[in-house]
Amino acid sequence: MTTPRSRTRLSRTARQTGLSLIELMVVLVISMIIVGAVFGMMSVSEGRKRTTMSVNDINQGGMFALYQLDKAVRSAGSGFSQNWPLTYGCRLNVNLNGDQILPLPATIAAPFTGLPAQLGGLRLAPVLIVQNGTPLATGSSDVLITMAGNAGFGEIPAEFSGTAPALAGNVVNLSLVNTMTFNDGNLVLVADRNDAQGNVQPCYVGQVQTGFTGSVAVQLPLAGAYNASAGKDGDATSISATGIAMNLGNVGAGNLPGFAVYGVGANQTLMFYDLLQSGGNGYGTVPLADGVLEMHALYGIDPNNNGTISWQAPTGAFDAAQLSNGSQTAAANLYAIKAVRIGLILRTSLPERAQELIGSASAATATGVVSPGPLVLFADVPGLSYTRTLQGAEQNYRYRVFETTIPLRNTLLQR
Image 1 (cartoon, rainbow, N blue to C red):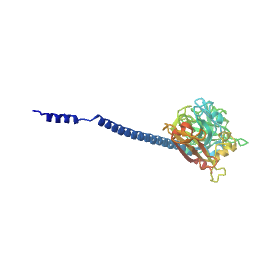
Image 2 (image 1 turned 45 degrees about the vertical axis):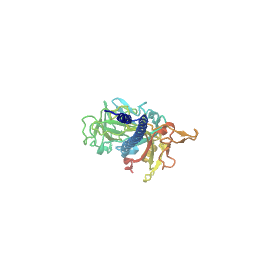
Image 3 (image 1 turned 120 degrees about the horizontal axis):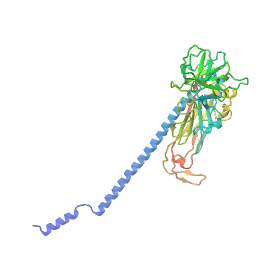
Image 4 (image 1 turned 45 degrees about the horizontal axis):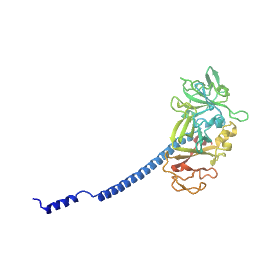
């Protein structure tokens, strides 16, 4: 039997079970604080993770870009530097499948559309720097042109045997002392002696006829996709009896010559253009590395050939157009180039946070920006450093600066 006292005790017990409204609100507030803290930590962690990954990406992109440029510059001049007084600055005549691909056509793919006007064609050189060769949305970037053969032991120049080239149909026959270093499919550079004034004469690229085997035979037939019987300066028969022939490599065998143009294009991409179109890309450009905002370069010159290098901007006598005028002075200046110093500015692909500036518009002070700048290349070279200021939204990205000095081995060997 339930007494009044027991009913009161049961009622009090029932009222004491569960959470009160105040207790529930306290729990909710604590939970919200914990959730906010967790999400805050996650946000900070994700932000740091994104920053780390973005910086790692441009670090890897910069290293890969320098690796590609190092390969090209270090091998520049291979195959034709042995006869630099005759080859440096000769105007290249290259006809591929009936299409005159060198000298440069009137227009080529972006970002190199301005090169034909800047150079007025293209001449043979181990390396050329075209200052501000690729104008960008903000600032500008240099263009690097490198040329190298890839024939290995076959890079020894072959002298003409005293007879000028002869044309039979579309076949250009070269009379050489011997043809042991040539095989079918090889690309051959044919150059002439300088004229009476010392000016470098036009040169031609032809392809050894299919089925030919190098031997002591003195006749080297040029007949292939690369046709030496046609060119802007005539054909290879214009070469005198004292000319020379140099092996540049073999397209079919995979040892492609490296005649290339490098520059920064849209979307912060380092682009590559194959001047001989030996890789099958035609007039199109190929992306090599992303994250590259700008590229700038200096020449390391040794005009006295005594092993002392000084740095030279690609201006004045070392402007790309001056180095490409075909004079003996230009050839000597090309020979004086013993190294190239390259600087890259890389930028992450995404901004990190909004810009916060205080102060006047003329003297703003960055308080919340990621990279206030400026960025400096070649800071240790008096008078030749390059400074890139950062303005507005540019300060919300992260940047890295890469520099390297690359020797021209083949030019150094000709001392």
